[in-house]
Structure formats: C-alpha cells, structure tokens
Image (tube, rainbow, N blue to C red; front, side, top):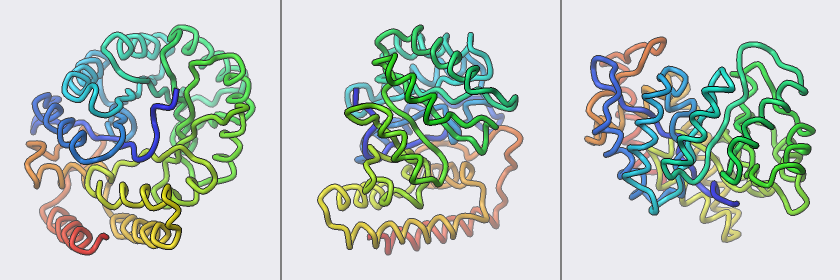
Length: 298
C-alpha cells in the first residue's frame, strides 16, 4: 500500500492566457516531473487549483497525466470536492483511468463534527473498494481537522486507507497519525520547513509544490536523510527554510508557474481568479531568486 513516499510534487495546473486548461502543457509538465527524479505527483490539490476546476476538467487532467507518466512514477489524484457525490465520482474515475491512488481533502467551509467526517471518509473508502485512498488534512484551509481518532478508526476498518497527507506544521500529529495502525500508517508532511524532522519521526515523505522548481535540492535532502547523513540533511533543510522565506512575499502557485513558463515547460503562467496576475517586476524578482538558489543550492 506504500505508494506516496519520498518527494511527492503537488503540481500546478497549466492554463492558457484565456484561463482555459492547457492540456498540451499538462502533458509536457507531467513528462518533465517524471524525468526530474521525484518519486510521485499529486495533481489537482491545492497547488493544482483543483477547487477552481470543473469535474470534467479534473477528469481530463488526470487522464492526461496518467497517460503520459503511468509506470514511470506514481500518480495520486486529489479527488476531494465539496460534495460526497462528486468526490466518489472522481475517485472511481481515477481508479478506472489507472491512477495509483487518490487523495481526498476533507469537506470544507462548513465546520463538521468528527462523526460527520467519519461518515464522509467511510463512504469514500467503501466506494473505492481496494483502491488506495490518502486522507488530505489541511485544517487551516478547510475549517475541519481530521483528528487522530478518526484516522485510527478508519485505519482499523479499511485496508485501503493508504495514509494521510498532513499540511500543518505539527510534528507531534505526524507521529500520532503514524501510530494509528499497528505496523505504521504512511504519513506525509505538507510543510517544506519540516521535511527532515518529519522523516526522523517516521514520515513516509513530503508533498511539496516547490519540488517542481527545485527537484534537485528536495531529492538530495531525502537521500541524505535516508542514508543517515544527518549533518548534510540538516544543512539542506535549513536551506529550504531560507528559500521558503525568500519566496514568502509572492504567491506560491504563480511563482511556480512563472518558473515553468520560463524554462518552456508550460506556455503561460496564468492562474484562475482569485489569484492575481503577477507583475513584470515580480517576474523579474522571482527569476533572480530562482537563479541564485539554483546556482548555490547544493
């Protein structure tokens, strides 16, 4: 069941200048990521602007990426929506299309009880049958925190619960999620500043957007951590922390798109509203920071 491990890229969704999905760029981006050395991709999540896409767009994007890179690296499609019906429809589509797993973000905006979240995920896991499902918990964005007890009960009942993607800077919760299953539940950190500490606590990997820009430094960090070279791994972790701080003034998704456009992977750095278009000055600043980091990253 261990599918998402190591460096997992939460990839963006390319649009053209009219904000239509650019499927040619989706295909080219998928190939670029598969060749970058990362271990898996996680399309249609937060960085993929999944909630700004229609169900049919999400299906076609998933199909395009799977067709391009199936068998090269793992593909776990984020299928969570605001409705249970659409979520299950997307999970079953991902399964049929040949994805390796699905991620499912919790229901959002309306605050839900543990009982409601339990029933929601139970319905998804039962509908998926033997298809691996990862719970995507990003409480700061969803207004719903998937508790350790919810995960513990689901892990005991459903073998196809593959793990948890936890996007919050809480190492203790990572440890608690891991220990919800006797032999350990695969848990991934969604916080670039805590990759190394999370690994030392038993995390299976990290899900990160900037891995599309700096795959080398993220892969190297993971390799050093796994090999036990703690001194060098910690040095790179601090470098990633500094990089994150330097990009903090900019929107992350447009920043990643600007870089991929600059190297010819996607045609436009356009995002859907409510993201604003980055200015020429911001493009210049971002390019300068990326060049400097790439010249000194390892």
